[in-house]
Length: 331
Length: 161
Image (cartoon, rainbow over all chains, first blue to last red; front, side, top):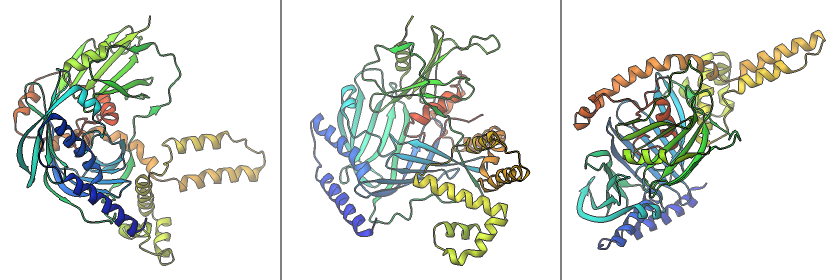
């Protein structure tokens, strides 16, 4: 790809930025949804560089992000600045993580679906169905003027969010997730940000540590569907959640592959695992009706008709229980 | 030397000028490892198809299954072929076993180091409550296919394998 083409594509990205900067005042909820919609696009279609701070229940890390859009493809390099120098490279949704572990660098592959600041999907219709949106005050985030938008669930089956959107660039500057007791569960926000004026891609590679060896992750393999008859179905999912993916995967310590189904309401993701309960006596007995929360993650496991059904996700406990109960086994 | 091997991969050094590098890659185990690692990184970055991790086992199995021709010369060349493949395969496959063995210890140590970064906040009080922990194997599977926004950077799985 020559530089001229890149320059032209960058110009079109700049045009989007100019369009995004043309709104400042909003009033109705519909206007707020449009701001959120533009933030979802801006996170992908702008080129920018900055540092954001990511805080979960357990830890806090600073991350340097370089994001570039050439008009067709996204390139992002995220370097964790605190602790181990983990790097997350994203090329149009294909994520490669360089994860220093035990003196080696383990290379992991993922699909990107909610990498900050592209937390929101570009299609907001499912979020609109389950959350309401209102605008808050103008605040200053990372030295930038920002508009606060508050996304609140219409029921108790999901958490609430606060988004701060750059009033000039339209970019999501900060996102905070709250539980229903209004405690912060997860916070990610820029503390410095600038639009990028480069068309070069020489930065899009990991910093190689010549003293370490690089190995591929011993990944939890996905296996082709075994073709065995499906003896269960999903009925009466909690409102707003729908199935987004299903696969068979090998799980550590399990002899046979486990069915893994993923549900989402557009923002939150929930995993459902279904497996046969081992019958032989030497296996440790399967836990019955375990409901627990670790950090932000709710977890529920129960035995149903000779199957172990396990559900987990960054959602309220009621949601994981309802999803587990929506699995019906055919007699 | 590693920097020079890296430069050769990036085509910053012309192949014609790299005779000494290529011979050192061939003769030194360490340099051969570096070469194969940089190629692995390059393949991952470009999204090239990687060899499956069973590649070597499958290959060896298939070689073993090949009919042995009962002629002394052929039998010898078969052995040479196997040995030849062993030399050419990247060193990382042989590292995998020792890697898995020391991983559990390494991760426990790493988790202890990382606790130094914890926020002394309300969350600390929650962490002290004894609750049944979420099994790591499910947490790993969940985060691999349905990651939360912070899980790309903060790992809540301790990988005690």
